[in-house]
Image (cartoon, rainbow, N blue to C red; front, side, top):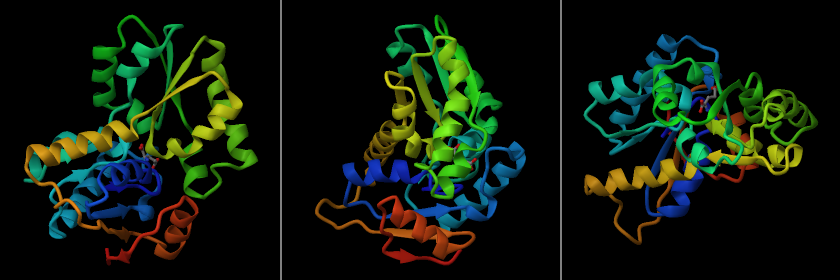
Length: 253
Ligand code: DGL
């Protein structure tokens, strides 16, 4: 599984809860964080090199636990590597079904909102609803630097979401895995605003793909969590622990 930093841990938590027997190798690409503002070609290059590293570690499945990296690379990864990949797109489909006002805010990084994958999703599932694209400038940085419950996070969420809520949005889609950790702040600042988070559906999809390929871990095995961190592993471990995760081992990049 990989992400630019702590965001993908939201998918990891869902996966571990559903399948505690699976071993997970989590690659946090902190040396290149944040992905969001980077050109797609650069993110694609990182995704390729990480997928290569995970393949070397004999990964049976790669979960791209990052909307930005999925937007930049998912199709090319599937073509280039002989491993199944699960990627992420903003959950517009469930949001469009859920929304009563018919106005949905998509909170995501510029890389995700500008990508062809998201354009296809809006074309397919955005009919009949007003879709407001909301770039989450600075939000992933707050989460990555463990300030997800700080006064700065409250202020940032207010600033970023207020225009969409004023325009009638009753549902916000978390189109970046980092934003999962801002859910309590969103609930506090905008009570009544429904939040669509794809961490759990992506974890479920990952387990389905494993089952389709008959690759599930033997039941009863105790799964462990290993970690590759491309910059400042000690700092990353500390932030991980603050979010409630305890990696068992560290693997060199
Ligand atoms: N967590 C990533 C995503 O889901 C992006 C955060 C970043 O900008 O690096 O899009």
